[in-house]
Image (cartoon, rainbow over all chains, first blue to last red; front, side, top):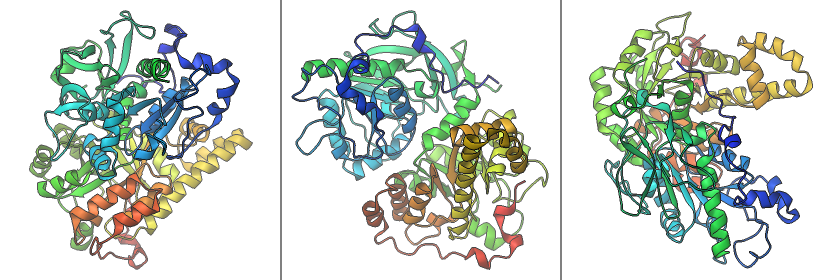
Length: 271
Length: 309
């Protein structure tokens, strides 16, 4: 039996540069946005300090990350992005994505782990399926972990009866590729993706696989970021990151930093 | 350590059966409903309704209660049929202290074992040493001390016990309130007089380190579900508002008039537990709830929650 690894340590932090591309480094010096760091919202009432609309020339914006909060490992992702200086809000209804005037309320989205068939059913029952799909297709930087990857995929090899996916990531997934819970494991995975401000070829991801899915087919435009043995377990296509595993349980924020990096770039380009 | 599946065997460093992956599966069940099922057909209905997992057993607690006799682990054939039928996690129950039933369930590759007071205890002194298994365990508790003793033995998830098979939610309410209140009390002690935590550990009959951790963090180190008597969407939402991470529903679904509808409604009310309008919508037109038994009418020897030590 291994030593339990503390979920509180953030082991990747020291090894990686305090990237200037991260919007948080700006937020630390900016008076305008600092108050937003103190707000901890529950439920769907969150309003970003600054919309990604007319005020982009005001340099400082604390990114707001929405975490789909219908079921599953929500709080772990909220803590991870908050530890990076971003603001985390729960997404529980379509109004949490876009306000009445049509402005986006969030700068990035996380679809957490959980039971994909449960979350799919709740999304469809409560009118979140199409709004999520439209927001992601519209370029919202998005990270899906485990069940979240399944939801992003274009095809599920072994769906639960009636289960659908958003079709925003050109991959086929096998939901229970790794078998039952006794095969669940902690593993370190070398980074196979291109080097960038956040992560490079000498880095690895600390992954917990929990009844994990596998990417069994990836489209031409899909980059492979990590493999576990021969199995593709982390991919990226444009604004969409999909991974089979749970870095948020291991205290590894590499993927969250990539997401915030995307969000910062998205804000600069579209803000 | 047991065998790993093919893809993991190719990596030199995978670690299976760690506390992190055991507790991690429970983390992924949060906000969800785990439903008791006795046939593959019921398992399919539960999956279709949005259950995050099913509990495979031969008799729901209401029938165990009415039929009496010794209740044991289910037939491996039934458990395997249910595992083959659904794609969501499958749990199964072992008797308290019956480590061989647990070995059998691990061999069958269930995803979680419930060391359960609903079955007849096999050992009136010892619980299963759950650290010896790669499969995670969930255990019942009526108070914080009991929860911490189970966690010390290796439980990766706790459920408050309630009184199974009654459809009476009052005991579930009592147990989740008790656990939350005792955690709050430890937090207050930690803030005011941390040296008093030693005597708290003595009173709770639980290890000091674990007591101190709960006092510091204000929560259990594992996920806390609730169980025992939940029969309606409002019952489930109340458990969530009282601080449960999720809900087990036993007899409440398949002993009711319209199981599929009720199952969907309880899933919706658990997800939107803080939204009375959605709970109201979920509660409409569900037909008859399970008839139920008032716990106050149950003679003490028939109360399952008192099993466990």
